[in-house]
Length: 317
Ligand SMILES: *[C@@H]1O[C@H](CO)[C@@H](O)[C@H](O)[C@H]1NC(C)=O
Ligand SMILES: *[C@@H]1O[C@H](CO)[C@@H](O)[C@H](O)[C@H]1NC(C)=O
Ligand SMILES: *[C@@H]1O[C@H](CO)[C@@H](O)[C@H](O)[C@H]1NC(C)=O
View (cartoon, rainbow, N blue to C red):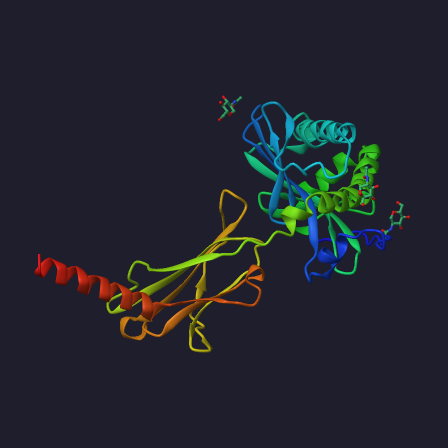
Protein backbone atom coordinates (compact mmCIF):
# COMPACT_ATOMS: atom_id res chain seq x y z
CA UNK A 1 0.00 0.00 0.00
CA UNK A 2 1.20 3.39 -0.89
CA UNK A 3 1.54 5.61 2.12
CA UNK A 4 1.03 9.23 1.41
CA UNK A 5 0.83 11.06 4.66
CA UNK A 6 0.85 10.63 8.38
CA UNK A 7 -1.53 12.96 10.11
CA UNK A 8 -1.18 13.06 13.85
CA UNK A 9 -4.57 13.95 15.33
CA UNK A 10 -5.63 15.06 18.76
CA UNK A 11 -7.14 11.87 20.12
CA UNK A 12 -7.62 12.54 23.80
CA UNK A 13 -11.18 13.74 23.23
CA UNK A 14 -12.26 10.72 21.16
CA UNK A 15 -13.56 8.23 23.67
CA UNK A 16 -14.42 5.48 21.18
CA UNK A 17 -10.94 5.28 19.72
CA UNK A 18 -9.18 3.05 22.25
CA UNK A 19 -11.04 0.02 20.87
CA UNK A 20 -9.77 0.71 17.36
CA UNK A 21 -6.30 1.96 18.23
CA UNK A 22 -5.70 -0.87 20.73
CA UNK A 23 -6.11 -3.37 17.92
CA UNK A 24 -2.90 -4.35 16.15
CA UNK A 25 -4.44 -3.86 12.73
CA UNK A 26 -5.13 -0.56 10.99
CA UNK A 27 -8.77 0.12 10.16
CA UNK A 28 -9.60 1.89 6.91
CA UNK A 29 -12.38 3.61 5.09
CA UNK A 30 -11.96 3.30 1.33
CA UNK A 31 -13.86 3.65 -1.89
CA UNK A 32 -13.46 1.14 -4.68
CA UNK A 33 -14.39 2.01 -8.21
CA UNK A 34 -14.37 -0.42 -11.09
CA UNK A 35 -15.08 0.95 -14.57
CA UNK A 36 -15.41 -1.51 -17.41
CA UNK A 37 -15.01 0.03 -20.84
CA UNK A 38 -16.63 -2.39 -23.22
CA UNK A 39 -16.57 -0.19 -26.29
CA UNK A 40 -16.77 3.47 -27.16
CA UNK A 41 -20.33 3.84 -25.88
CA UNK A 42 -20.65 1.18 -23.25
CA UNK A 43 -19.18 1.76 -19.82
CA UNK A 44 -20.14 -0.01 -16.62
CA UNK A 45 -19.36 1.35 -13.17
CA UNK A 46 -19.25 -0.36 -9.84
CA UNK A 47 -18.66 1.91 -6.91
CA UNK A 48 -18.61 0.92 -3.26
CA UNK A 49 -17.50 2.23 0.13
CA UNK A 50 -15.99 0.01 2.80
CA UNK A 51 -14.91 0.06 6.42
CA UNK A 52 -12.25 -2.64 6.22
CA UNK A 53 -14.11 -5.63 4.78
CA UNK A 54 -17.59 -4.35 5.60
CA UNK A 55 -19.38 -2.68 2.70
CA UNK A 56 -21.33 0.41 3.80
CA UNK A 57 -21.91 2.20 0.47
CA UNK A 58 -22.95 1.10 -2.97
CA UNK A 59 -23.39 2.97 -6.24
CA UNK A 60 -26.56 2.82 -8.31
CA UNK A 61 -25.20 3.32 -11.82
CA UNK A 62 -28.66 3.65 -13.36
CA UNK A 63 -29.77 6.53 -11.13
CA UNK A 64 -26.12 7.61 -10.81
CA UNK A 65 -26.31 7.97 -7.07
CA UNK A 66 -24.97 6.51 -3.85
CA UNK A 67 -26.67 3.80 -1.80
CA UNK A 68 -26.24 3.90 1.97
CA UNK A 69 -26.25 0.35 3.25
CA UNK A 70 -26.07 1.02 6.99
CA UNK A 71 -27.97 3.50 9.16
CA UNK A 72 -24.55 4.93 10.08
CA UNK A 73 -23.12 5.02 6.52
CA UNK A 74 -23.08 8.82 6.53
CA UNK A 75 -20.95 8.96 9.67
CA UNK A 76 -21.37 12.35 11.27
CA UNK A 77 -21.55 14.25 7.96
CA UNK A 78 -24.60 16.39 7.25
CA UNK A 79 -26.95 15.49 4.40
CA UNK A 80 -25.71 18.58 2.56
CA UNK A 81 -22.06 17.58 2.80
CA UNK A 82 -22.93 14.02 1.75
CA UNK A 83 -24.88 15.14 -1.31
CA UNK A 84 -22.02 17.48 -2.28
CA UNK A 85 -19.65 14.52 -2.10
CA UNK A 86 -21.99 12.30 -4.12
CA UNK A 87 -22.20 15.04 -6.74
CA UNK A 88 -18.42 15.30 -6.78
CA UNK A 89 -18.04 11.57 -7.38
CA UNK A 90 -20.71 11.64 -10.05
CA UNK A 91 -18.90 14.39 -11.92
CA UNK A 92 -15.25 13.69 -11.31
CA UNK A 93 -14.79 9.98 -10.83
CA UNK A 94 -17.28 8.84 -13.41
CA UNK A 95 -17.78 11.49 -16.06
CA UNK A 96 -14.17 12.56 -15.87
CA UNK A 97 -12.72 9.13 -16.56
CA UNK A 98 -15.17 8.70 -19.40
CA UNK A 99 -14.29 12.04 -20.95
CA UNK A 100 -10.58 11.60 -20.47
CA UNK A 101 -10.38 8.16 -21.94
CA UNK A 102 -13.05 8.06 -24.55
CA UNK A 103 -13.17 11.50 -26.04
CA UNK A 104 -9.43 11.79 -26.21
CA UNK A 105 -8.09 10.19 -29.37
CA UNK A 106 -4.68 10.57 -27.77
CA UNK A 107 -5.38 7.87 -25.20
CA UNK A 108 -5.64 5.24 -27.99
CA UNK A 109 -7.40 2.81 -25.67
CA UNK A 110 -9.62 0.87 -28.00
CA UNK A 111 -9.86 -2.65 -26.60
CA UNK A 112 -12.25 -3.50 -23.80
CA UNK A 113 -10.52 -2.77 -20.55
CA UNK A 114 -11.14 -2.34 -16.86
CA UNK A 115 -9.96 0.39 -14.51
CA UNK A 116 -9.93 -0.24 -10.79
CA UNK A 117 -9.43 2.58 -8.36
CA UNK A 118 -9.04 2.48 -4.62
CA UNK A 119 -8.84 5.57 -2.46
CA UNK A 120 -9.18 6.13 1.23
CA UNK A 121 -7.44 6.49 4.53
CA UNK A 122 -6.58 4.23 7.44
CA UNK A 123 -6.27 4.70 11.15
CA UNK A 124 -3.19 3.01 12.57
CA UNK A 125 -2.67 1.68 16.09
CA UNK A 126 -1.38 4.68 17.96
CA UNK A 127 -3.63 7.08 16.06
CA UNK A 128 -1.82 8.09 12.87
CA UNK A 129 -3.95 8.30 9.73
CA UNK A 130 -2.53 7.36 6.33
CA UNK A 131 -4.20 8.23 3.02
CA UNK A 132 -3.86 6.40 -0.27
CA UNK A 133 -5.06 6.44 -3.86
CA UNK A 134 -4.11 3.92 -6.50
CA UNK A 135 -5.41 3.04 -9.91
CA UNK A 136 -4.98 -0.25 -11.72
CA UNK A 137 -5.56 -1.14 -15.35
CA UNK A 138 -6.50 -4.74 -16.10
CA UNK A 139 -5.39 -5.77 -12.61
CA UNK A 140 -1.92 -4.20 -12.82
CA UNK A 141 -0.77 -1.12 -10.91
CA UNK A 142 -1.18 1.81 -13.20
CA UNK A 143 -1.02 5.19 -11.52
CA UNK A 144 -1.00 6.56 -7.99
CA UNK A 145 -1.41 9.94 -6.42
CA UNK A 146 1.62 11.33 -4.64
CA UNK A 147 2.55 14.82 -3.58
CA UNK A 148 -0.42 16.33 -5.46
CA UNK A 149 0.37 14.72 -8.75
CA UNK A 150 -0.21 11.66 -10.85
CA UNK A 151 2.65 9.15 -10.69
CA UNK A 152 2.72 6.45 -13.38
CA UNK A 153 3.52 2.95 -12.09
CA UNK A 154 6.33 1.10 -13.83
CA UNK A 155 3.94 -1.77 -14.74
CA UNK A 156 1.74 0.82 -16.45
CA UNK A 157 4.29 1.45 -19.16
CA UNK A 158 3.76 4.21 -21.70
CA UNK A 159 -0.03 4.14 -21.29
CA UNK A 160 0.28 5.17 -17.63
CA UNK A 161 2.67 7.96 -18.58
CA UNK A 162 0.22 9.07 -21.22
CA UNK A 163 -2.70 9.14 -18.79
CA UNK A 164 -0.70 11.15 -16.25
CA UNK A 165 0.29 13.54 -19.03
CA UNK A 166 -3.35 13.92 -20.06
CA UNK A 167 -4.26 14.71 -16.45
CA UNK A 168 -1.49 17.23 -15.88
CA UNK A 169 -3.40 20.33 -17.10
CA UNK A 170 -6.21 19.62 -14.62
CA UNK A 171 -4.50 21.09 -11.55
CA UNK A 172 -7.77 21.92 -9.82
CA UNK A 173 -8.65 18.24 -9.80
CA UNK A 174 -5.50 17.41 -7.92
CA UNK A 175 -6.36 20.10 -5.46
CA UNK A 176 -9.78 18.51 -4.86
CA UNK A 177 -8.32 15.01 -4.63
CA UNK A 178 -5.77 16.20 -2.09
CA UNK A 179 -8.46 17.80 0.04
CA UNK A 180 -10.61 14.65 -0.13
CA UNK A 181 -7.74 12.36 0.81
CA UNK A 182 -6.04 14.34 3.53
CA UNK A 183 -8.89 16.29 5.03
CA UNK A 184 -12.30 14.83 4.23
CA UNK A 185 -11.36 11.16 4.49
CA UNK A 186 -9.75 11.28 7.97
CA UNK A 187 -12.69 13.32 9.27
CA UNK A 188 -15.17 10.89 7.71
CA UNK A 189 -13.27 7.84 8.97
CA UNK A 190 -13.34 9.02 12.59
CA UNK A 191 -16.99 10.02 12.29
CA UNK A 192 -18.04 6.71 10.75
CA UNK A 193 -16.10 4.65 13.31
CA UNK A 194 -17.93 6.51 16.05
CA UNK A 195 -21.35 6.27 14.38
CA UNK A 196 -20.93 2.60 13.49
CA UNK A 197 -19.11 1.43 16.59
CA UNK A 198 -21.98 -0.78 17.81
CA UNK A 199 -21.86 -2.69 14.49
CA UNK A 200 -18.10 -2.58 14.04
CA UNK A 201 -17.31 -3.70 17.58
CA UNK A 202 -20.00 -6.36 17.72
CA UNK A 203 -18.97 -9.92 18.45
CA UNK A 204 -20.93 -12.77 16.88
CA UNK A 205 -20.03 -16.32 17.88
CA UNK A 206 -19.29 -18.87 15.17
CA UNK A 207 -21.22 -22.08 14.77
CA UNK A 208 -19.18 -25.06 13.68
CA UNK A 209 -19.97 -28.47 12.27
CA UNK A 210 -18.13 -31.32 10.57
CA UNK A 211 -18.80 -33.21 7.39
CA UNK A 212 -16.85 -35.32 4.95
CA UNK A 213 -16.03 -34.00 1.50
CA UNK A 214 -15.58 -35.92 -1.76
CA UNK A 215 -13.02 -38.69 -1.18
CA UNK A 216 -9.55 -37.52 -2.28
CA UNK A 217 -8.63 -41.11 -3.27
CA UNK A 218 -8.98 -44.80 -2.34
CA UNK A 219 -8.82 -45.30 1.42
CA UNK A 220 -8.69 -41.58 2.11
CA UNK A 221 -11.13 -39.18 3.74
CA UNK A 222 -11.58 -35.45 3.35
CA UNK A 223 -12.59 -34.05 6.72
CA UNK A 224 -14.40 -30.73 6.47
CA UNK A 225 -14.81 -28.32 9.36
CA UNK A 226 -17.37 -25.56 8.67
CA UNK A 227 -17.23 -22.40 10.72
CA UNK A 228 -20.01 -19.96 10.08
CA UNK A 229 -21.79 -16.84 11.22
CA UNK A 230 -18.89 -15.13 13.00
CA UNK A 231 -17.89 -11.48 13.20
CA UNK A 232 -15.36 -9.87 13.08
CA UNK A 233 -13.45 -11.67 10.35
CA UNK A 234 -10.22 -12.77 12.06
CA UNK A 235 -10.60 -16.41 13.08
CA UNK A 236 -8.27 -19.36 13.71
CA UNK A 237 -9.36 -22.82 12.53
CA UNK A 238 -7.14 -25.87 12.68
CA UNK A 239 -7.46 -29.64 12.55
CA UNK A 240 -5.73 -31.06 15.63
CA UNK A 241 -4.69 -34.41 17.08
CA UNK A 242 -4.51 -33.69 20.80
CA UNK A 243 -2.32 -30.60 21.01
CA UNK A 244 -0.73 -31.26 17.64
CA UNK A 245 -1.73 -28.86 14.85
CA UNK A 246 -2.25 -30.81 11.61
CA UNK A 247 -0.08 -28.99 9.09
CA UNK A 248 -2.08 -30.44 6.21
CA UNK A 249 -5.08 -28.29 7.19
CA UNK A 250 -6.25 -26.31 4.16
CA UNK A 251 -8.19 -23.15 4.76
CA UNK A 252 -10.72 -22.07 2.14
CA UNK A 253 -11.64 -18.52 1.26
CA UNK A 254 -13.70 -16.40 3.59
CA UNK A 255 -17.24 -16.34 2.20
CA UNK A 256 -19.67 -13.60 3.19
CA UNK A 257 -23.03 -14.52 4.69
CA UNK A 258 -25.96 -12.24 3.82
CA UNK A 259 -26.01 -10.70 7.31
CA UNK A 260 -22.43 -9.40 7.22
CA UNK A 261 -20.99 -12.41 9.09
CA UNK A 262 -18.43 -14.81 7.62
CA UNK A 263 -18.14 -18.45 6.65
CA UNK A 264 -14.92 -20.46 6.43
CA UNK A 265 -14.08 -24.11 5.74
CA UNK A 266 -10.97 -25.97 6.87
CA UNK A 267 -10.30 -29.34 5.29
CA UNK A 268 -7.87 -32.17 6.02
CA UNK A 269 -7.03 -35.08 3.73
CA UNK A 270 -6.32 -38.19 5.89
CA UNK A 271 -6.07 -41.97 5.59
CA UNK A 272 -9.49 -43.35 6.58
CA UNK A 273 -7.97 -45.27 9.49
CA UNK A 274 -6.42 -42.16 10.99
CA UNK A 275 -9.49 -39.96 11.18
CA UNK A 276 -10.58 -41.06 14.66
CA UNK A 277 -9.19 -38.79 17.37
CA UNK A 278 -8.90 -35.76 15.13
CA UNK A 279 -10.65 -32.57 16.16
CA UNK A 280 -11.35 -29.20 14.63
CA UNK A 281 -10.45 -26.34 16.94
CA UNK A 282 -11.80 -22.79 16.44
CA UNK A 283 -10.55 -19.64 18.16
CA UNK A 284 -12.44 -16.39 17.78
CA UNK A 285 -12.58 -13.13 19.73
CA UNK A 286 -16.29 -13.69 20.49
CA UNK A 287 -15.56 -16.94 22.34
CA UNK A 288 -13.69 -15.28 25.19
CA UNK A 289 -10.88 -17.84 25.20
CA UNK A 290 -13.29 -20.83 25.21
CA UNK A 291 -12.27 -22.50 21.96
CA UNK A 292 -14.83 -24.52 20.05
CA UNK A 293 -13.62 -28.11 19.66
CA UNK A 294 -15.40 -30.68 17.51
CA UNK A 295 -14.21 -34.30 17.54
CA UNK A 296 -14.40 -36.34 14.37
CA UNK A 297 -14.46 -39.61 16.30
CA UNK A 298 -17.51 -38.59 18.30
CA UNK A 299 -19.40 -37.79 15.16
CA UNK A 300 -18.48 -41.16 13.66
CA UNK A 301 -19.46 -42.85 16.93
CA UNK A 302 -22.85 -41.10 16.86
CA UNK A 303 -23.32 -42.19 13.27
CA UNK A 304 -22.44 -45.80 14.18
CA UNK A 305 -24.86 -45.73 17.13
CA UNK A 306 -27.60 -44.20 14.98
CA UNK A 307 -27.02 -46.80 12.27
CA UNK A 308 -26.95 -49.58 14.87
CA UNK A 309 -30.24 -48.39 16.37
CA UNK A 310 -31.83 -48.09 12.95
CA UNK A 311 -30.75 -51.61 12.13
CA UNK A 312 -32.03 -52.94 15.48
CA UNK A 313 -35.44 -51.31 14.94
CA UNK A 314 -35.58 -52.63 11.38
CA UNK A 315 -34.79 -56.18 12.55
CA UNK A 316 -37.36 -56.02 15.39
CA UNK A 317 -40.10 -54.38 13.36
C1 LIG B 1 -21.17 -1.75 -27.23
O1 LIG B 1 -21.41 -2.89 -26.44
C2 LIG B 1 -22.78 -3.10 -26.11
C3 LIG B 1 -22.85 -4.30 -25.13
O2 LIG B 1 -22.07 -5.37 -25.52
C4 LIG B 1 -23.58 -3.34 -27.38
O3 LIG B 1 -24.94 -3.52 -27.07
C5 LIG B 1 -23.41 -2.12 -28.29
O4 LIG B 1 -24.06 -2.34 -29.52
C6 LIG B 1 -21.92 -1.84 -28.54
N1 LIG B 1 -21.78 -0.58 -29.29
C7 LIG B 1 -20.88 -0.39 -30.25
C8 LIG B 1 -20.86 0.95 -30.88
O5 LIG B 1 -20.11 -1.30 -30.59
C1 LIG C 1 6.16 18.02 -3.99
O1 LIG C 1 5.74 19.06 -4.89
C2 LIG C 1 6.29 20.32 -4.61
C3 LIG C 1 5.65 21.37 -5.52
O2 LIG C 1 5.31 20.84 -6.77
C4 LIG C 1 7.82 20.26 -4.79
O3 LIG C 1 8.42 21.52 -4.50
C5 LIG C 1 8.40 19.21 -3.83
O4 LIG C 1 9.77 19.05 -4.04
C6 LIG C 1 7.69 17.86 -4.05
N1 LIG C 1 8.12 16.89 -3.03
C7 LIG C 1 8.48 15.67 -3.31
C8 LIG C 1 8.86 14.79 -2.14
O5 LIG C 1 8.49 15.22 -4.46
C1 LIG D 1 -17.08 14.26 12.80
O1 LIG D 1 -16.21 13.59 13.70
C2 LIG D 1 -14.84 13.90 13.56
C3 LIG D 1 -14.08 13.05 14.55
O2 LIG D 1 -14.71 12.99 15.78
C4 LIG D 1 -14.61 15.41 13.76
O3 LIG D 1 -13.25 15.71 13.52
C5 LIG D 1 -15.51 16.18 12.81
O4 LIG D 1 -15.39 17.58 13.05
C6 LIG D 1 -16.97 15.77 13.00
N1 LIG D 1 -17.90 16.50 12.16
C7 LIG D 1 -17.84 16.60 10.82
C8 LIG D 1 -18.95 17.33 10.17
O5 LIG D 1 -16.95 16.10 10.17
